[in-house]
Amino acid sequence: MNPALRKEYLEALGVTPWVLRAGKASEAAGVVAQALQAPPVEENLGWEQLRSRVAACTRCGLSKTRTQTVFGVGDQSADWLVVGEAPGAEEDRRGEPFVGRAGQLLDSMLRAIGLARGQVYIANVLKCRPPGNRDPAPAECTECLPFLERQIALLKPKIMLAVGRIAAQNLLKTDSPLSKLRQQEYRFGAARVPLVVTYHPAYLLRTPTDKRKAWEDLKFAREVYARVDR
Ligand code: SF4
Image (cartoon, rainbow, N blue to C red; front, side, top):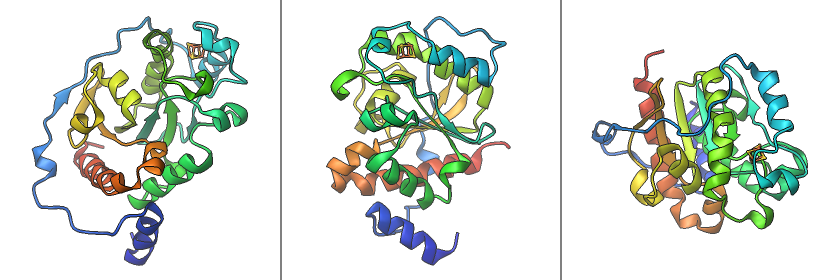
Protein backbone atom coordinates (compact mmCIF):
# COMPACT_ATOMS: atom_id res chain seq x y z
CA MET A 1 0.00 0.00 0.00
CA ASN A 2 1.09 3.56 -0.69
CA PRO A 3 2.93 4.61 2.54
CA ALA A 4 1.26 8.05 2.64
CA LEU A 5 -2.18 6.48 2.30
CA ARG A 6 -1.39 3.93 4.96
CA LYS A 7 -0.27 6.70 7.31
CA GLU A 8 -3.56 8.48 6.68
CA TYR A 9 -5.55 5.34 7.57
CA LEU A 10 -3.50 4.75 10.68
CA GLU A 11 -4.10 8.30 11.79
CA ALA A 12 -7.83 7.72 11.29
CA LEU A 13 -7.41 4.71 13.54
CA GLY A 14 -5.60 6.92 16.02
CA VAL A 15 -2.35 4.98 15.79
CA THR A 16 1.18 6.19 15.13
CA PRO A 17 2.84 3.70 12.77
CA TRP A 18 5.78 1.72 14.08
CA VAL A 19 7.62 -1.45 13.09
CA LEU A 20 6.60 -4.85 14.48
CA ARG A 21 9.39 -6.77 16.21
CA ALA A 22 10.79 -9.54 14.04
CA GLY A 23 9.55 -13.03 14.84
CA LYS A 24 6.32 -12.05 16.55
CA ALA A 25 4.13 -13.92 14.08
CA SER A 26 6.05 -17.13 14.52
CA GLU A 27 5.18 -17.06 18.24
CA ALA A 28 1.54 -17.85 17.39
CA ALA A 29 0.35 -20.61 19.67
CA GLY A 30 -1.70 -22.38 17.01
CA VAL A 31 -4.42 -23.30 19.50
CA VAL A 32 -7.24 -25.28 17.91
CA ALA A 33 -10.73 -23.87 18.34
CA GLN A 34 -13.43 -26.36 19.11
CA ALA A 35 -16.19 -26.92 16.61
CA LEU A 36 -19.51 -25.25 17.33
CA GLN A 37 -21.76 -27.30 19.57
CA ALA A 38 -25.16 -26.10 18.36
CA PRO A 39 -27.72 -27.85 16.14
CA PRO A 40 -26.61 -27.33 12.53
CA VAL A 41 -28.47 -25.64 9.70
CA GLU A 42 -29.04 -27.93 6.69
CA GLU A 43 -25.97 -28.28 4.54
CA ASN A 44 -27.85 -27.63 1.29
CA LEU A 45 -29.02 -24.16 2.32
CA GLY A 46 -27.65 -21.47 -0.05
CA TRP A 47 -27.08 -17.81 0.75
CA GLU A 48 -30.59 -16.59 -0.08
CA GLN A 49 -32.35 -19.49 1.61
CA LEU A 50 -30.20 -18.93 4.67
CA ARG A 51 -30.97 -15.21 4.63
CA SER A 52 -34.71 -15.99 4.49
CA ARG A 53 -34.38 -18.55 7.27
CA VAL A 54 -32.68 -15.97 9.50
CA ALA A 55 -35.23 -13.26 8.65
CA ALA A 56 -38.05 -15.54 9.82
CA CYS A 57 -36.21 -16.98 12.83
CA THR A 58 -37.92 -17.22 16.21
CA ARG A 59 -35.44 -19.62 17.81
CA CYS A 60 -34.84 -17.26 20.71
CA GLY A 61 -36.62 -14.44 22.51
CA LEU A 62 -34.72 -11.72 20.66
CA SER A 63 -37.12 -12.26 17.77
CA LYS A 64 -39.77 -10.48 19.84
CA THR A 65 -37.80 -7.27 20.36
CA ARG A 66 -35.85 -6.86 17.09
CA THR A 67 -36.81 -4.40 14.38
CA GLN A 68 -35.25 -6.73 11.82
CA THR A 69 -32.57 -9.37 11.61
CA VAL A 70 -29.03 -8.36 10.62
CA PHE A 71 -27.76 -11.17 8.41
CA GLY A 72 -24.35 -9.96 7.27
CA VAL A 73 -22.86 -7.93 4.47
CA GLY A 74 -19.99 -8.02 2.02
CA ASP A 75 -18.30 -10.05 -0.68
CA GLN A 76 -19.61 -13.62 -0.60
CA SER A 77 -16.30 -14.83 -1.99
CA ALA A 78 -14.15 -12.80 0.41
CA ASP A 79 -11.01 -14.25 1.95
CA TRP A 80 -11.63 -12.32 5.18
CA LEU A 81 -14.56 -12.86 7.51
CA VAL A 82 -15.02 -10.33 10.32
CA VAL A 83 -17.21 -11.61 13.15
CA GLY A 84 -18.69 -9.25 15.72
CA GLU A 85 -21.03 -9.68 18.65
CA ALA A 86 -24.57 -8.57 17.83
CA PRO A 87 -26.45 -5.70 16.20
CA GLY A 88 -26.72 -2.46 18.15
CA ALA A 89 -29.53 0.07 17.88
CA GLU A 90 -28.34 1.55 14.59
CA GLU A 91 -27.71 -1.86 13.03
CA ASP A 92 -31.16 -3.03 14.16
CA ARG A 93 -32.69 0.00 12.40
CA ARG A 94 -30.68 -0.36 9.20
CA GLY A 95 -30.35 -4.13 8.93
CA GLU A 96 -26.59 -3.97 8.40
CA PRO A 97 -23.76 -4.88 10.79
CA PHE A 98 -21.14 -2.37 11.94
CA VAL A 99 -22.72 0.91 10.93
CA GLY A 100 -22.42 4.19 12.86
CA ARG A 101 -19.24 5.24 14.64
CA ALA A 102 -18.10 1.72 15.48
CA GLY A 103 -18.60 0.76 11.84
CA GLN A 104 -16.54 3.72 10.68
CA LEU A 105 -13.74 2.71 13.01
CA LEU A 106 -13.93 -0.89 11.77
CA ASP A 107 -13.62 0.45 8.22
CA SER A 108 -10.50 2.40 9.26
CA MET A 109 -9.06 -0.68 10.95
CA LEU A 110 -9.58 -2.70 7.77
CA ARG A 111 -8.17 0.04 5.55
CA ALA A 112 -5.07 0.14 7.76
CA ILE A 113 -4.27 -3.39 6.56
CA GLY A 114 -5.21 -2.64 2.97
CA LEU A 115 -8.80 -3.90 2.94
CA ALA A 116 -11.87 -2.00 1.79
CA ARG A 117 -15.15 -2.83 3.56
CA GLY A 118 -16.48 -4.32 0.32
CA GLN A 119 -13.58 -6.78 0.13
CA VAL A 120 -14.49 -8.60 3.36
CA TYR A 121 -17.59 -10.30 4.69
CA ILE A 122 -18.96 -8.98 7.98
CA ALA A 123 -21.35 -10.86 10.25
CA ASN A 124 -22.23 -11.15 13.91
CA VAL A 125 -22.61 -14.11 16.25
CA LEU A 126 -26.17 -12.94 16.93
CA LYS A 127 -28.47 -11.81 14.15
CA CYS A 128 -30.88 -9.90 16.41
CA ARG A 129 -30.24 -7.02 18.78
CA PRO A 130 -30.23 -7.74 22.51
CA PRO A 131 -32.45 -5.05 24.09
CA GLY A 132 -30.57 -2.17 25.69
CA ASN A 133 -27.33 -3.50 24.17
CA ARG A 134 -26.97 -6.01 26.99
CA ASP A 135 -24.56 -8.91 26.55
CA PRO A 136 -26.11 -11.83 24.68
CA ALA A 137 -27.23 -14.72 26.89
CA PRO A 138 -25.35 -18.00 26.32
CA ALA A 139 -28.59 -19.70 25.20
CA GLU A 140 -29.18 -16.99 22.58
CA CYS A 141 -25.68 -17.52 21.19
CA THR A 142 -26.18 -21.29 21.12
CA GLU A 143 -29.41 -20.89 19.16
CA CYS A 144 -27.96 -18.41 16.68
CA LEU A 145 -24.47 -19.81 16.07
CA PRO A 146 -25.60 -22.41 13.49
CA PHE A 147 -26.50 -19.54 11.14
CA LEU A 148 -22.98 -18.14 11.37
CA GLU A 149 -21.58 -21.63 11.01
CA ARG A 150 -23.53 -22.06 7.76
CA GLN A 151 -22.33 -18.63 6.57
CA ILE A 152 -18.76 -19.79 7.21
CA ALA A 153 -19.37 -23.02 5.28
CA LEU A 154 -20.73 -21.04 2.32
CA LEU A 155 -18.08 -18.33 2.41
CA LYS A 156 -15.06 -20.61 3.00
CA PRO A 157 -12.97 -17.72 4.34
CA LYS A 158 -9.19 -17.90 4.38
CA ILE A 159 -9.06 -16.06 7.71
CA MET A 160 -11.49 -15.00 10.42
CA LEU A 161 -11.10 -11.90 12.56
CA ALA A 162 -13.15 -12.12 15.75
CA VAL A 163 -13.73 -8.61 17.07
CA GLY A 164 -14.60 -8.27 20.73
CA ARG A 165 -14.87 -10.56 23.73
CA ILE A 166 -18.29 -12.01 22.98
CA ALA A 167 -17.41 -13.06 19.43
CA ALA A 168 -14.05 -14.47 20.49
CA GLN A 169 -15.40 -16.39 23.48
CA ASN A 170 -18.29 -17.90 21.53
CA LEU A 171 -16.19 -18.92 18.55
CA LEU A 172 -13.41 -20.35 20.68
CA LYS A 173 -15.71 -21.84 23.35
CA THR A 174 -13.80 -20.24 26.18
CA ASP A 175 -14.40 -17.73 28.95
CA SER A 176 -10.85 -16.39 28.85
CA PRO A 177 -10.59 -12.60 28.76
CA LEU A 178 -9.88 -11.00 25.41
CA SER A 179 -6.47 -9.83 26.62
CA LYS A 180 -5.45 -13.51 26.88
CA LEU A 181 -6.92 -14.47 23.50
CA ARG A 182 -5.35 -11.86 21.25
CA GLN A 183 -2.00 -12.26 19.49
CA GLN A 184 -2.52 -15.97 18.93
CA GLU A 185 -3.47 -17.93 15.86
CA TYR A 186 -6.39 -20.31 16.36
CA ARG A 187 -7.98 -22.74 13.93
CA PHE A 188 -11.75 -22.75 13.62
CA GLY A 189 -14.01 -25.70 12.86
CA ALA A 190 -13.52 -28.70 10.60
CA ALA A 191 -12.01 -26.53 7.85
CA ARG A 192 -9.43 -25.27 10.38
CA VAL A 193 -9.84 -21.68 9.26
CA PRO A 194 -7.15 -19.44 10.83
CA LEU A 195 -8.76 -17.18 13.42
CA VAL A 196 -7.31 -14.09 15.10
CA VAL A 197 -8.87 -12.04 17.89
CA THR A 198 -8.90 -8.29 18.44
CA TYR A 199 -10.87 -5.59 20.23
CA HIS A 200 -14.35 -4.49 19.19
CA PRO A 201 -14.34 -1.01 17.64
CA ALA A 202 -17.10 0.10 20.06
CA TYR A 203 -14.71 -0.78 22.92
CA LEU A 204 -11.90 1.10 21.18
CA LEU A 205 -14.10 4.19 20.93
CA ARG A 206 -14.52 4.03 24.72
CA THR A 207 -10.88 3.06 25.36
CA PRO A 208 -8.76 4.72 22.67
CA THR A 209 -5.55 3.88 24.56
CA ASP A 210 -6.00 0.29 23.38
CA LYS A 211 -6.01 1.24 19.70
CA ARG A 212 -2.30 0.54 19.53
CA LYS A 213 -2.92 -3.03 20.69
CA ALA A 214 -5.64 -3.36 18.05
CA TRP A 215 -3.14 -2.26 15.44
CA GLU A 216 -0.73 -4.97 16.68
CA ASP A 217 -3.55 -7.50 16.28
CA LEU A 218 -4.39 -6.33 12.77
CA LYS A 219 -0.78 -6.62 11.69
CA PHE A 220 -0.66 -10.06 13.26
CA ALA A 221 -3.81 -11.05 11.33
CA ARG A 222 -2.27 -9.80 8.12
CA GLU A 223 0.84 -11.90 8.82
CA VAL A 224 -1.29 -14.99 9.48
CA TYR A 225 -3.18 -14.35 6.22
CA ALA A 226 0.10 -14.00 4.33
CA ARG A 227 1.01 -17.53 5.43
CA VAL A 228 -2.31 -19.06 4.37
CA ASP A 229 -2.39 -21.35 1.32
CA ARG A 230 -4.49 -19.70 -1.36
S1 SF4 B 1 -30.86 -13.97 17.62
FE1 SF4 B 1 -30.57 -15.61 16.15
S2 SF4 B 1 -31.58 -17.39 17.08
FE2 SF4 B 1 -32.38 -15.55 18.11
S3 SF4 B 1 -34.24 -15.02 16.95
FE3 SF4 B 1 -32.53 -13.82 16.10
S4 SF4 B 1 -31.82 -15.04 14.36
FE4 SF4 B 1 -33.05 -16.40 15.66
